[in-house]
Length: 369
Image 1 (cartoon, rainbow, N blue to C red):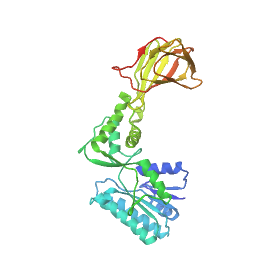
Image 2: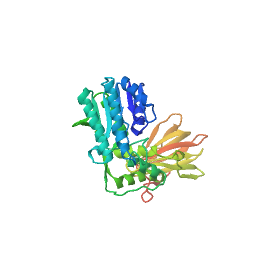
Image 3: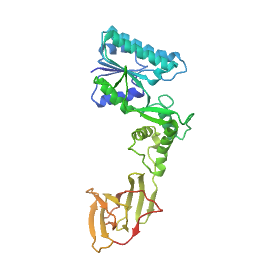
Image 4: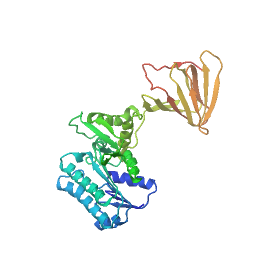
């Protein structure tokens, strides 16, 4: 297929073209503000499907709304009719088309053009009234409040919240793309005369700001957001895409002594915590047991010996482990246990515990294996 994408360098356009290429589409006609206007005629003649994403979201000159959201649409449809090209056309409109604002009026005018194109030519048209979109490659202070919040919070800049109780209806870019590919296959999700993206999320403005702020704080408190919540998962991915390029990494607190080191890596309220333990050659760590806390040990480098003894027994159980053969060893409750570095290099062990360490209730009792 020859696929025409207007607004190819915009937020939605960038994501769409990347995914088109991922799915094997190679004949993509990219049209932008910088493109030679004559190309639009060539593309209109040869295309098999049109993603008409170009438009003006913000402008100090109200006339630019009509020029960008109505004028280009009119030009595109006239060229398609000129070449008797009945390629389906997908238009990205906005829920603002229902409002009597310069932007809303211009989007509604573009919608009407497309619906008339259907009545005149019988070509398939898909008008998507999109809510507030968010995701990677969006522009702060232009595309969405999510982009602005992510950009500013990641850089310790102020954000403006006029009404923290204002309700937002958000839609994630990957969900938009999934729906667009359904339209490309002729199976759009319809609601009356318009198409919709079925997956959207509601959140208050103040809650959105607090959630994104918590993402920044995660580096200090080592917590991982609740990925079971779909909106949180999508917002966190978006936030990471806005990190300054010199701030991708961050330091962890290493607790170092003559035996090696112990470093907490991440904490989750629901899934416990992960730590990295480094033991010097000949060093034994552990010799304790737990009532309820349980752990998993994974040696990733070096050679070790994990020893167990049920606290009411004299029998010792041993497991030899090494980075050459990755295997997880469960640490059951009621068994005192230790890990000994029996190699000549540092023993590096990834340790998971089912609960985050609480100094007020450590559930750790020292008994020699």
